[in-house]
Image (cartoon, rainbow, N blue to C red; front, side):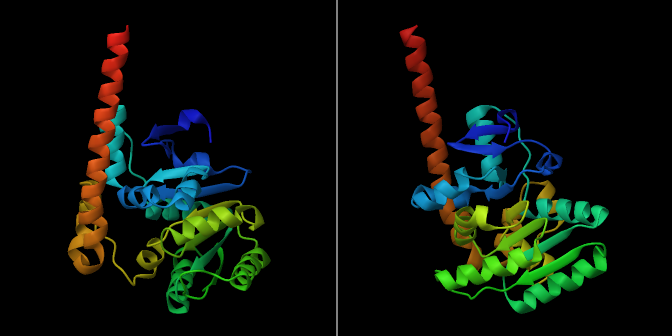
Length: 253
């Protein structure tokens, strides 16, 4: 990715360009980063490597937007996985393209395919539901690669929850016969309608996280409250460090 299109923030190359720039002949691995994934990656080197190894790392969270403002004095736009998904579907429909959904249950995938056929009739769509387990076997991996590569989609959407999906996509990137590989997790449920995404008002106010927390407090409290506090600590620590370095530089000069 062109360095002019990214902002180094909290040690990660965060994407700041328009989604149109993703449409390239080169293979592109797209992941997202938010306050939760940042905190998890602090304790998981493999996950951190997977995120930093993406060609594109979308700022999918108000926490990352605030971090860019606080630490880099840059205003960047939040780009959610759902925004990426919608953008790519419209492009593929215009170009009679193809996409493949890897992850989720068979029932969820059936709902996704039915909606694709109704809303984007020009898209050729396929899917595969891998076994639900913490760690895949070599046979599981071969089966997933076979399903994707037999279909040869232009765009591969992966939805197996973080950090499993990011690690898997990074590990198998060069074995996948797909031009754009996207780890988009919850978007599978949003698009299938099994989980409702907060409305446009919540999103426009930067409060999508609060809308999700209100809808699913038991499942989301740790992601947004607990890890939100930890992320805040990291931000303050990084800001203090940057001020200290700046003060030391001025003193030396």
